[in-house]
Amino acid sequence: MIYMFTDILMVFEFMREEKTGFAHIMMGGSIFVNLGIQLIVVIMQNFKLGWRKVLKDVLIVLTCIKPGVHAWTVASETEIVEDQLFDAKHEMTFTNCAELFAEAISGTVVEMAAIMSKCSETSANAAFSFACCVLTAAFTSSKISHDLDTGKKQRKKKPWFYGYVPY
Amino acid sequence: MVLRLRSILDIGEVSCVFLPLLSSAFNLLTRSMTCVLLQLKGAMTLVAQVLGGDLVLFFVVKALRRDLRYWMPVYGVGAGVSTFLICLITKVVGDWTAVVQTRSSVDVGGVYFTFGLLITALVGIIAAAGYKKVEGEEGTLTKETVIKAMATCCVGMTISFVALLCSMNKTYVHTFLSTETGNKSV
Image 1 (tube, each protein chain N blue to C red):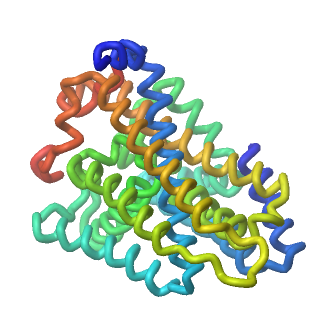
Image 2 (image 1 turned 180 degrees about the horizontal axis):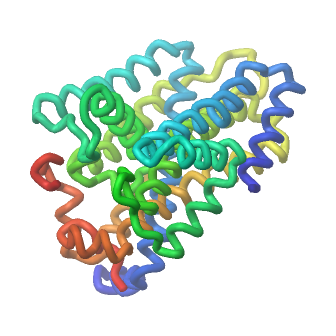
């Protein structure tokens, strides 16, 4: 939520400073590419389960409540349905990767470019947004690795690969 | 000294969450700073060439090793599209945010992951060394500041990665140097 808020803040700041190119990249990356990839994932995941299920998941993605739904399905250890491509944990990983790919990485580069081009004019908002962007991306990256590595199913399935985190 | 360092780092699970986070943050900072430095030199095409060339090289190496097909049960055109998208996203996410699990042989592979961190630091240092402050332009960074910032990021990334290797379960260190292909591990 903080990350989304700071992103919106930066888009308005870029617009105010007439750096519309930066604002467009942030909006394009955050909204269109990120949501586009997430939609592809849910369509592929539920393709064989019928259009009702696909439509339901598409609406979940478009209303941006997907992270909450993922957290619930992973925490409740919901089993994979027969015709689904991957389990809830892998679906969450794909969604997190989409966020990193489309939103966090491009956002960091754009904000770094804005800061470095005129570093003496960097506002507190821009510095805070940049710190949030980097730390959120790093936290998501670390969370992906930790979640996959400590999963019971993964450790049982591939014990030679999953298990670097000692208990 | 080494034993003392290991005992400090040996706090188990906490260090295996905190150290990848640090490594990822420094890696992202190094890469984004490198791109901006190259772009400030007026070499946007150079940025595109470096990033694009890296991606093409990755796909060529995977194709030569007959390791392009992803493990998901998707066939036909869907298989090609999903493989391309997943390989692209995994490669970019692995390179930029150093997700430790992308060292899996079905993703970028152990040796490619570790080598990628070295390349990131190397290209970053080269970009910082080649930076020149534009004369008369107010507000831009001095060369000294850029070199210090880049050195901090590279050293931070290296220390956090080495510390992760020291603090993790030792039987998995070899997975960071694995040359196994995806089709052999699935």
